[in-house]
Length: 154
Image (cartoon, rainbow, N blue to C red; front, top):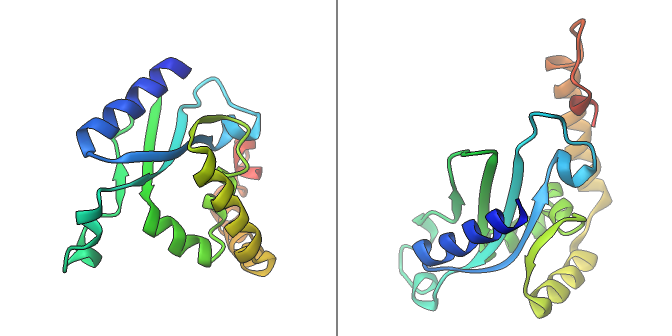
């Protein structure tokens, strides 16, 4: 599956005219408890060409790449500028990506610089509020029935 994921990432680079800087597994596989029906949640950060960032209407351009789920592959990526904005807010999903034990690709210099920025901008308080809000929602939506998927507890 690793080779299929790498080939898909290369195809995305070519089709979208981007450079992937970091790609990893997110979700249950990264957490170490996939179920029989778990898909591969591949997440990546990418860079567009310079001209894309210099456009007058830059703010109104799509800054994510989301592919339809296909053959157990759920592949999504965020533009570097979007990722930096989310890092400033201590976005937990982004922080989880950089702690994933399953890394499909990484630009060494980029990864080191980004991890140092994580140290600088990480806010335990922001993450607490995010996870607290998520836990309340999961409790309300998923944990009240007779049968609960173990994934919802995590």
